[in-house]
Length: 396
Image (cartoon, rainbow, N blue to C red):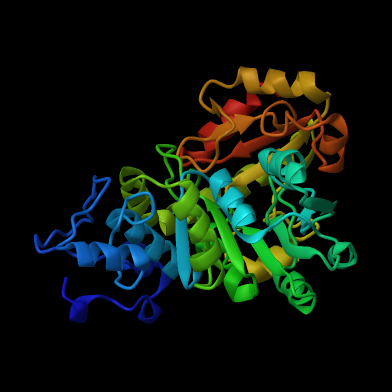
């Protein structure tokens, strides 16, 4: 594709960006993006090699940090998130790690929501803690608690909204104002919503993180992650860590993620529609103490979800009477739903967070995060919603 035919993503709607942004056709004239399965690149001369390595001349150097297929994915996701830059990584956790190591040093401080993925909590407490980076955990929805927890050493605020697995929310715009007044960055894990349902940068966030393993790929086929933000923050510090340490996305995985982005809007709309029906049904079941889903009018932050999201997502959690035994019995009684801790798949998955995604946390950490023994999380897939209901009803 000639430069005159390359699209400007700003001129197009999100669905079009998801299909077209970032594509640069080769001289072969291909319609679908190619996979550049190469580890290295050839230079025309020693002088050109030197210019590439020094940064004087743009172009490919080594696929640990420059690959055309990966670049296409990065440019497309950045266009969808409204970011200047995206850095693709090997997994969602490597995206969080690259952000932390790229931006933090010994003596720095993080304020984080308690309601985050269990592995993120472990990273902050067990590994960053060993490097002299302290983390203070606060209630996600309590904006005043965030402000009170900020110290002079605080470098960024980290959160998931909606949270995993209780689908709690926080006002992103309000938190962005607090962070910026205190000269901090706001980092938002947007895994549950994707840019289709929520765009944190437009609400004031500085960095958006993704586990591409989830909804972006949509069929549970590949591992990957991404960090989106400004050229200064993401393009310098986070990219610098990736170039050096190499938690890189493969060209093949990037190509699979590109195909996932093409259908992301349709899938997120379908996930959201079925999840709402399931949550409404769960509220009516006698064995269910409480259902957690932002689309329910009973959700304490339903109005906030309506304001900052264009849909409610595919994650539904619910509290069963009877604790762990009841939870495991319900899970084991299913025949259709996949017993898996993954989410964002076309296939509906079910898990018991207290013994899987948050199983490595201490009992106190789980209590603080609201993870009870009777809690079940369902990532609603693309099957017929009545079949999903009927499968869950086997164990009720």
